[in-house]
Length: 88
Image: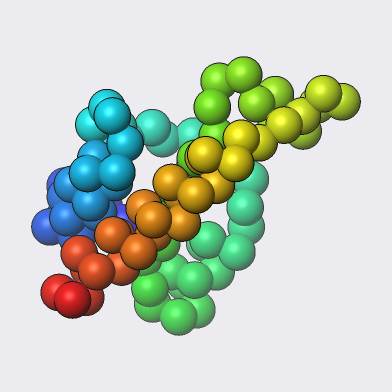
């Protein structure tokens, strides 16, 4: 996982904060996606997991939803993050 004190983390956080009305926050959670550890161990790469769900999405429940606005803003957010990390 990308260290929260790293320069790349700060750039990614700033890029995300530019797309959303509130600043992006770091939330450590889970570890339920095993491939993330494999990226770091096998490929020698850090990973940054970013979620765009809202509190009322009820992910993985019978009444799950995902707002299209979150999808669009999420796509734009990734474009911002990639630009920030590659200097584009």
